[in-house]
Length: 422
Image (cartoon, rainbow, N blue to C red):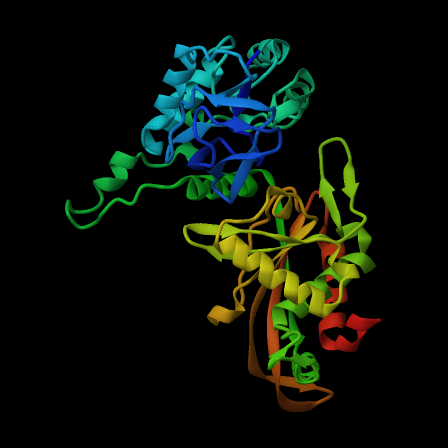
């Protein structure tokens, strides 16, 4: 019996993936676990492995084609088994996905929600899950599957039913805003060009709207004295061992901020949490996501258990993650999850800003630039290097007093940086 080779769902927000390159030709033999094709998502590029051994046949998704998650793209036949024609519904569905994203997104979503019996539809789900979703009025595109290959099971539907849902944009005049046509009429014809949104930009837009609409943001800000930190950083970099003319490490301010924020969450564990409707998730480690700008958007790779790592280890790991993020070579486990995040715009000369929380995080620390400012202390006025940081919190999980407490802990590590090593 032939085994489906499907386009896997590797991210909760993922709706489609692009086949960038087939690594095995049709008719060639493959072994279970062999890489068969490369795919691109809105966040990363990855190789997909063969789920079984046999002969690759009926490739229906061509290179450069966008395919809905869970959709078969080819089949693997047992040795000696004669390939059969690919199901017409499957071939049609994949061909539809190859249309421009602006045209294909709506038909794909509509097909997934309007029919519960399409075997080659955009979403893989058990019959019971489809029936429960239909009865509850749930769009399966919005449900994360926990079954094999991302298949949606009944438990996933029950979980989605229990979660709060926003009103559809079509019934929410505030969310709907001006139509595309109305916006275009505000500008003279020929005074602009249209740049179609890619999957990354669409995903970022959807998540930001969801975050600001469903998460009650609360903000606390503070100024940090940097003089001691800057001196310690210079001393550590100067003392770094040199091999073949290359220092073993070169610490950045951001590396030290990551460590300080991780230690602050360690010391104030009540702030190292995630809100769910049923319970608060108290995290064992401070897994810190760090926003990295990439062409077309941003991604947040995660330094796991950052409170346990040395500054040099954080520095090396962050450089590697940032480079692979820009090349879209991150693995899903390197950017999914995390317990908090940092967004640093100081290198652009930004003095201060407030960042939007990225669920499931309950906090995000926005870091501005360090600059020389006048400081008053004990009646004495002098100049010092000062950096402004703003903590955004999910007020359901981290209220004002708790936010102030964890921010004060962060300041203590920044302003007395030798504590980073204690």
